[in-house]
Image (cartoon, rainbow, N blue to C red):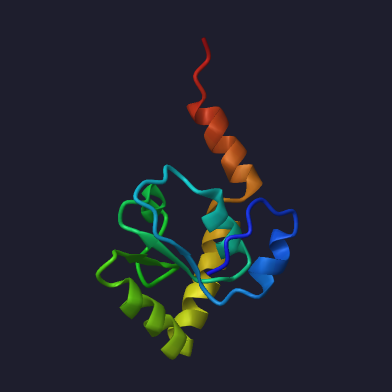
Length: 114
């Protein structure tokens, strides 16, 4: 693991990534997970991450905890078919459900006007 601090060349990091893991204790909705999914990178999120509501476990990502994180990482490394399917389904999730049109529509439908 390399901690680089703020970067402007994050696309280069996504390009060389095999798995994206965000084992947070709390995260309301991390855009970085959508970014990884949009680049076809399988994601592993913690059970405490609210983003887990978007993840259908083992379909478009993996919901993990500290006890099973190692096993989940190794399963993606060892099972190329599972990894490929998760990547394919993650792309569908991002581009079908979380595209800009749907995001704006949802925002406008749920916006509070004073």
